[in-house]
Image 1 (cartoon, rainbow, N blue to C red):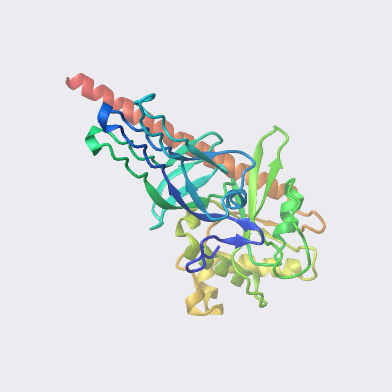
Image 2 (image 1 turned 90 degrees about the vertical axis):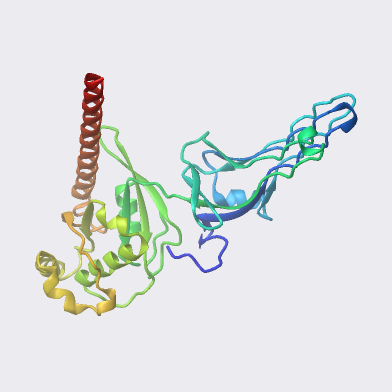
Length: 336
């Protein structure tokens, strides 16, 4: 994913994953100097996570991308304490990072019902403010959608990602025989016999379509992952070799396996600027064909095994930290 300079939002067809908004809390109400009355506070602006909401629907609801909460009520003889202005709740999709205009993250909402105070309303007029109201907080914020999935399919155009996604999950992506097919990220679910569900998402990282060998493809994908977000290279990786139904596929696979055993010996195949600093280590290499179905069940089993092993490792690390914390706490009590 590449962010255009100065772009207010990123698009994949009609898909939006970044939205820039102006938000302002409501102005407070006027105080009542003669009777010491206090104006109502301005309303607040909240982002509230809600299922089945998209950033596109937020943009459609606020086409000017400007959100302002209600003004607090003035103090009066009948109501010395003015009522608070109306809050503005903006429904956003779960899995949103909230960033300021310098792209620094200041919050997030991940599950339905979670709330984030985007802009606080101003104080009402009172003795402390010479009975004059205060303006509400104003900010320019970015809503950045985190596409949350357990597994990501990464590949160049026409590699068969959409076909694979349709084979192993319930997703129904657009499939066609041309280079640039995936116009937006697709999310599907793999269902296992024990009712375990795994979310899987498909992305492509480049629109260059020149012919390249499988080994060149792996190195180029590694380079693009490195440039996009280096920490992705620390994630467990499986390599699915598609189109095994084609002629010479087995010979090409054997050649690739040799190259992957000693990748440094074949780096001369690429120009220096596209050679990654690190090479990916694959837990499993699975030959597949989305056309014949070869290797699909094995791939699903490997995905499940990899996720289960990662979960077990995280649980073991958590238990280790918890035990260490209990031991430290016990030693401190003993010393006391």
